[in-house]
Length: 137
Image (cartoon, rainbow, N blue to C red; front, side):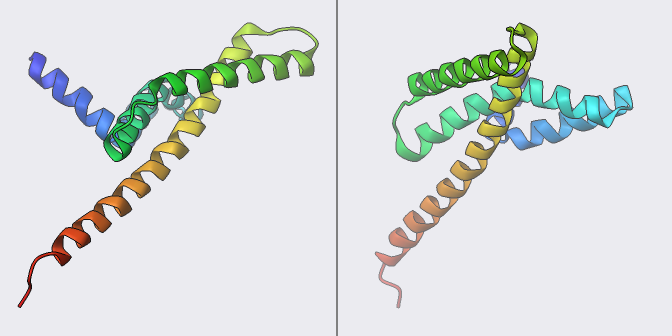
């Protein structure tokens, strides 16, 4: 049972778009509200996207940038809290956290797509370079 859970979590970290689609359709079926399902999907899949981006960076460049990811998250949080404070005249904690978390969803979804493209192109060039070294007659 533990192996099955590890495999499912590993699959979702490697391919978070599968998790996002499955989670959205399950919540939409359960709640019958597409808007709520989209919000809940964004809220619950952000952490998976953060770790997926981290593992993609490790795979592509073999460098650990996780501390920089934390710093970027912290800076985004500060900017979000400051902006909401400036717009509303007072600090709204729940709105700040919700806005911060959903901004991270969009950011890390975009980063995931960009890094997947970079990884695929990099792998293709590596494969073509390795195939070119063989003597094809």
